[in-house]
Length: 147
Image (cartoon, rainbow, N blue to C red; front, side):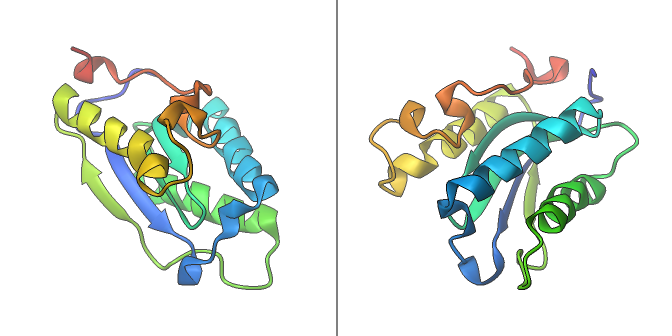
């Protein structure tokens, strides 16, 4: 899908109580499968991501008919449903910023990819398996953002 301008966002959300939920590989893989399935359904595009032990960052573009809040509901609610946890999974809300232009896109993408390096989880961003920096499948930057 080719996204309309001003519909690409950098988003961050934390697990409830900053629980290290994604330190468990099966949980991180579950979130990745959900993202892949939602992308295949046309709910949103994912342009960059990192799944840290207690939070994740994404650059995403919701489908034209999907508000950002609904896209995040698909992600957070879908993951919680599949996890079947007896305890709260996510913090109440999420932080977001609109991606303004290609330079802003690059800044946010680089921030995402550097996150595991800053947290000493790897030496190079490409080594962190739960990141788009590792070469996992993602969507290209929206046409209006490409340099």
